[in-house]
Length: 469
Image 1 (cartoon, rainbow, N blue to C red):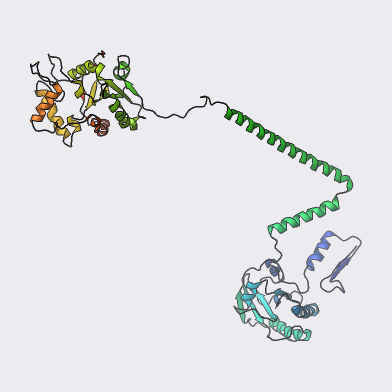
Image 2 (cartoon, rainbow, N blue to C red):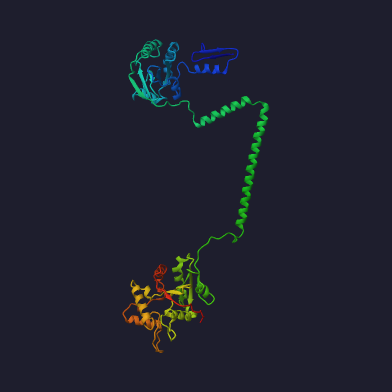
């Protein structure tokens, strides 16, 4: 076996090995010892570290660098330096290299200390003190480096002087990493890898291996095609089922989204226990008093006012027709009086429409809203309420609720009207006329006070029976 290694000089090998059986380790050692050209080009940081390594000992290893351009006009300069490197005998103390200044702009710019790139080649002798710092010396400018004699005349004395003398080099620079000119992009790497794979397969696959490979590839293609076809047929079937389902009438099988609604119950004999007597603890019934004439006007207003409370599960909302439930309302008012009455109440139902009661069935009390109730008028409602409470406890009857002890049976005024008249005589503002559509204007504020617990409570001993008129 024989091994011949050549560099730029193809006339004779730079290394040769001949033996019966060359060991692998011997091949690797010979190649590693001669893997660089006589005048290599600096094209990456790894190449710079291998050719011109950093050394802390001064003058231990010098690097001769030719700064040129990638043009045929500078090829004679490189040939001249290559010839000098071939004939010189500096062992491992000096290495020779060249660089293209247009490809390693930052490195050359650091050597020139910010000056513009030269048009003609320059030669520098470098010593790398560490990875970032270098010391260097420029050879005289204006020399014809294309001439071998000129190159040898100036370069040989300078190298001998720097190898022997301990004098410092005149220039110092901080350099960065060199650009890897052989680096490939992602697409180039993929294409290269595919080409290498193709070459390997072409060299290693024989005719006897082609048929199994084709069979495997065909099997994979058939499996993928069958899977795609099944997915496509399944999609068509789903589309057909959805179209059939859309064409059929929709049924109520789907769970409907819960929409909180507000239901107004009517207080009657059959609903009385559920709305009043058998209320769960903590629950209340908000009851509106209407008659047949005012029903159409007051119910929509009442519904709109209590609509924000529809999600409150402790509230029930109802209305009472006074044409049928006036007797129950009379008895309820009678039970709320501090003193009992011997005579039946004389109440005009027209004066009671628009009244709202909050009934607490468990604790047996109710709160009252009316447009002329002392709690619902002006900012002095609390004072009026105190006066009303005092009057209810002292006077034979309550003026607001219309309780009067007069024995006159010829009076055309109801108890409520007579009670209001007595207050009007004291100069209060209850004489103002309130129209039917304005009876519930103050209900929102009263509801706020009701849930705050600041409304007056009328307690009773029991809930009267509901007997329809």
